[in-house]
Image (tube, rainbow, N blue to C red; front, side):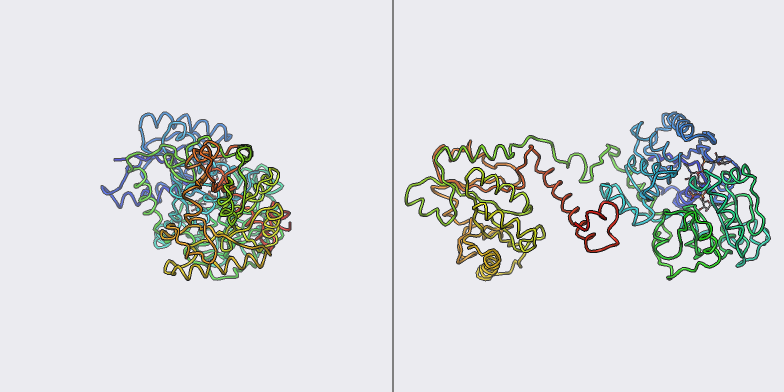
Length: 637
Ligand code: UD1
Ligand code: UDP
């Protein structure tokens, strides 16, 4: 049976470990893997650690590292050292880590260093800031180290996609803390040993607070105004205080005077009881923000931006930064604007899904071969290979053909050349994607005194010859002395169309180009042609000829193409046809030809990247809310 080594160490991880323990216990012998737990000892006070094992029925960890408090360097180093020994002895199939603590980071690094696949639960959340937010970098590193990223929200899944994670590496399972909340809500009245009245407050007559984030507790100058604002609240504020926060307040000699009540950290069910009985919550805890939302309690977050931003967007939490007055006002009056949305954190069955996904992962025959590329697994990735399609080579080809006596003519001039026994090259460019690359090539040809025919599309998502930018590029191509032709996308019309109907559609598109650009369109090439188009039947594009017609491809003329970024029958200069002095019909897709040799895969990847940038810019230009960061200045261009 596969063995998963779970690494926990801090309070939020015990809570999650409770969910996994319960699902595995329910599955019994049917569980798809065995769990072996390591407690790092990052949190060690009984009310920060043991209480959760008791409350949630989590079996005692098999290994305890007991690292305790210290600098991040101490904690991460100590945990890694201890874990390496345990991994050596246990030989787990995978290591599982939760969230964003130093224990998580140490587990992720240990796993990668020992070539053990890492599984990361609560992956992908981001606040996009690092200063005084060690959790952000911990999570980013853990995500990147992970073979399997299990997310609590759809948003986190999308963040990972944007960061280039392969979809197979990311699974949305929902929030295990929601499972636990639902289970706890049903039993907390009996299970909790203390309720609000035991703290001197009445249900529905107090607020609840937890503050412990580094950014709020590193300096008393930030923490004390927050505490003072809560102390001025109209209602009492119950504050189960994290040891870190208590230390800072005590060292500053600060004590509550009016509404704030410091109490010791609570066990899970006691905490649920005070949560479900309160009016509003003030918290910078990621767990408590979600639990407030699950409990339908308006939540005030003393941060400028927080995790679980969906809750802020829903109107059920408000970020007040460190402005104590804003916090104080919100504490007395904040009311959510909208009904609470359902399903943001799953359906309460995340634990089962998590076990299923982990089970599938560790049950694979071969796991952990470190396949990270967003496009696929290692065998599916493009293999680097040299390419000859450079602009320098293109010039050499043109010069070579010219020195052979080839004339570069338009398609309608082929017949005349044949009758006069001249030797011609039809330089054809089908513009499938990149109009910018077409213009570059057109200018090279102009410098070399070469005529080519540019086949442009009317119906395509890739460029628009009718836009200001598109039309300007096409005019420059035509001004360089080239011919205009139609690249007709058969696949954008229904398959059921007859050849006459296709010809009609083709004629319509050609006429649009002609009237827009005031140039004749005398020939058509097909994009994504249906099989019978390939027979060369002229009826498909009548009255204009098309490039698959035999007159352009057979007999005294040789057809060659760089489709897919390689010369299928060799470079034109090296071709037998050239040696034999045949007419040449050369299809060149400008996109493949670059100043520096670049593989076709990379060319298309760069093109796709440029397209998505252009899309973002055009949205920013039109829509203020998207004008952030570099898009703010670029958007208006
Ligand atoms: C850690 C996590 C944070 C998480 C929080 C949950 C990191 C970087 N941060 O922060 O993401 O939200 O846990 O509570 O891992 N202390 C005790 N007794 C304890 C534990 C801590 O007194 O049992 C005191 C010590 O003074 C310690 C301080 O709290 O130095 C901070 O503890 P630490 O584990 O380093 O970070 P947290 O602030 O708890
Ligand atoms: N919690 C608790 N008692 C407390 C405070 C918190 O049981 O006094 C629970 C609660 O379920 C919370 C979880 O511990 O969601 C996580 O704790 P914490 O706020 O320390 O961590 P974070 O979620 O900010 O990482």
